[in-house]
Length: 98
Image (cartoon, rainbow, N blue to C red; front, top):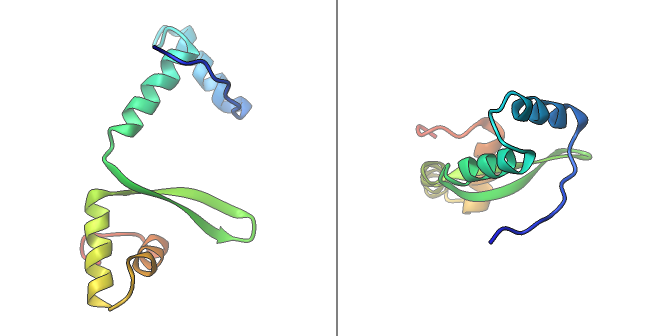
């Protein structure tokens, strides 16, 4: 069973979404949003964190299973907590060589 809910979006995103619907890529806005959420949920995201970059500037950061492995290795090598390691690596960019 599907549940109804409302969504607020920037005008530019709505226009882009409507263009995809008008071009028959999706049958409706709901179909498009459901497709994108399904695709996003299949990315193997292990953890989501909210990073505060500066005063009033925050955004979600999505961490995959392989990124969690790099974070854990970095934490162990530097004798710091997983959270501290995540903060450091997210700010500099997570790589497997971290």
